[in-house]
Structures are given as structure tokens and as C-alpha cells.
Image 1 (spheres, rainbow, N blue to C red):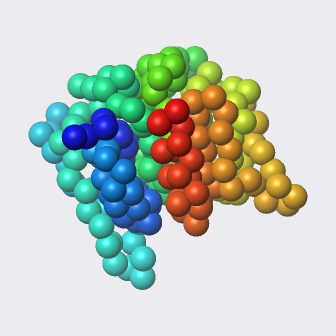
Image 2 (image 1 turned 45 degrees about the horizontal axis):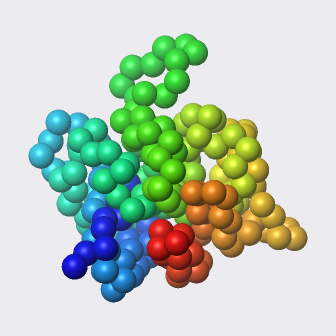
Length: 196
């Protein structure tokens, strides 16, 4: 019996370590993992992980369109790390003063309104939240050092431990991890939060 689904938002150039651990950890604890993305009218799209030594180790074929699901379909939603979330902020057309209308950003706006749905980010994946400062304003978070400026400019309150960002921060329904090196700590915390 499945305990429910974990939705993982994904695109090209996702983090390989996180992808591997998500696929191991959640099924071991009774949860299905469903990868979701904007498919641009295709039935499915195949995304590759960040290359390591010129080798793309993992590929994910995604057939769940983010416009066709609701945050409440999931026990928790995780934005995968690396550069995937930057790609999902893309808008075909833009207007001065208009909020970001990318499907993944619209989905995130709905997700932050769901009291029972836990949200998780690791490393660079807070980039998706940065697309609309209303998603991040005043939230205590952690992230990779190279996106601190983006997160703070979007109103996030980055938590530090000495001269580095914290490994893990939980603020309400948002669980943030610093980078893939803390993925196991992040997963344990995420599981504990969704099982409260």
C-alpha cells in the first residue's frame, strides 16, 4: 500500500545525486515518486542530469504535465536541484510589471497555499521561488552559496552558521537543504515533516 505520492518538479540539468536518492529513499519508506514538469504540448519529455566528466549519468522521462495536477495530489513536493528550476522560470512572452506566468511558478503559487503539502528545495532549486518574491518573502531558508544574492533579493531570510549557510532549515511547510551533500539529512527531515 502506497502512503501517497511525492511530486518532484524537474527539467533538464537536474542534480544526479538528488535524483538517485529520491528514487531510493521514498519507495523504501512507502511513497511513490512522480516527476512533473511543463511538457510544452508533448506527451512526454526526456531530461538529462548535469554531466559529470562529460557523462550524463541519469535520464528521466516525464509524462506528468504540471498544468494537469494539483499540489493537493501529493504529500510533498520537491524542486530538484542544479539548473532545472532556472529553466522552469522561462516565459514565452513577458510584460513589464507582470508577475512570472511560467506554469511551474503558477503551480508553486498554488502549492504554498496548501497547508498540508510540504515543500522542499535543495541547493539551486530555490531559484523557482525567486521568480515571484511573494513566494519567499520573510521565509527562513538555506541554499547554495552562489544563489544567496538571488534568494535575499527575493526577500528570503538566509540562515547562516558562521561563514557558511546552514545545512538544513525548516520554516513552516518549507524544508530547504544547502546542497546535495546534505541530501540524506534533507530526506530524513522531509519524511519526518510529511509524517507528522
